[in-house]
Length: 261
Image (cartoon, rainbow, N blue to C red; front, side):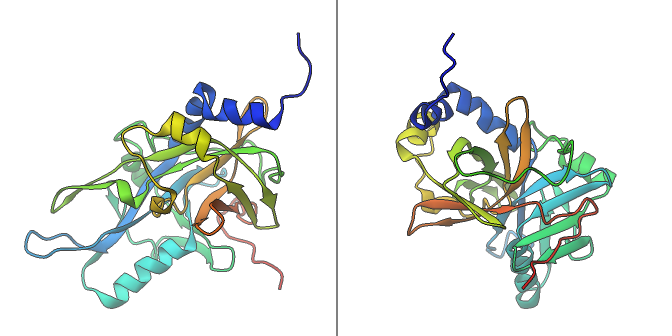
């Protein structure tokens, strides 16, 4: 039996192969598309913007966790248009009415969800069918050299079936190397030579097309289990990296600890 530790290159290949493909499915169990815009009409064209929300329960009831800029976008639509909707999957709600907390510095927002809403949100397909229950909280901080799995709903894969029917296809990564870590962020470069071969599928996506994945659940696999550690924040085109927001500022009741300035 070989007891030598696995090399970084070997780990990358595993993450980009069948094992990584299986890992990539896990975050999508707790991810749902969020979309907002003017209510569709057969007479009026409307633009729908979307993000991703993580379904989680810290032991005090179900919560939707996403980026604050998703809520900010909805507010801007409300200010500029009439009859604006906001949906998590098939469920329409007003996130402002159900907002627990938000923090624009960290870029996190939490939405209280009722049991009835969660039942409807999770009932349609395997993707987004579960609410994640952390075994302990806050999570162990992410470390440089670990691999994260994440998944969400890029806006570029949005398909318009009819004026009032949208389909949001998912995209995920089973193993993306963490390159650097700060108090509220961790950063991962994309290993194109790996994920393109394994996860190209019908959609040969360029990375700048990943808009809409803000709020995607992000996990680290630690030996025997996945640990939820944060959400996708943005893709940085200049450095070809994905930036994640750490979830540790979120308290079990959904309130968010503000950074000390």
